Length: 116
Image 1 (cartoon, rainbow, N blue to C red):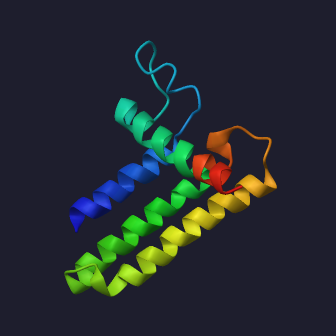
Image 2: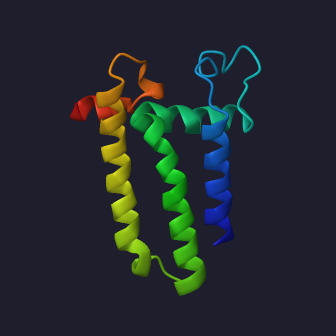
């Protein structure tokens, strides 16, 4: 359980301190992400994939950690996890529909662009 909550904390920190120029400066200059180079890679993959909806991954991990803590299994909360995953994909599409001209990490990501 503590591992899932730690992973959730790391995902939230890496997404919250995401900066678009960090990936280009990964090997040459200091990065602005609080988790360093690993945070840059995590945030870049999530933000390119789902855009702003990538913050839903934090909620999914919180729910999985809560299920492990309370029930010792994620099966009782699995339906909610799938629902949040669906909401993440729909939110990715919605942000892309509302802001189609913006660069990918700040809109719905590749998933939103593919569904648009």
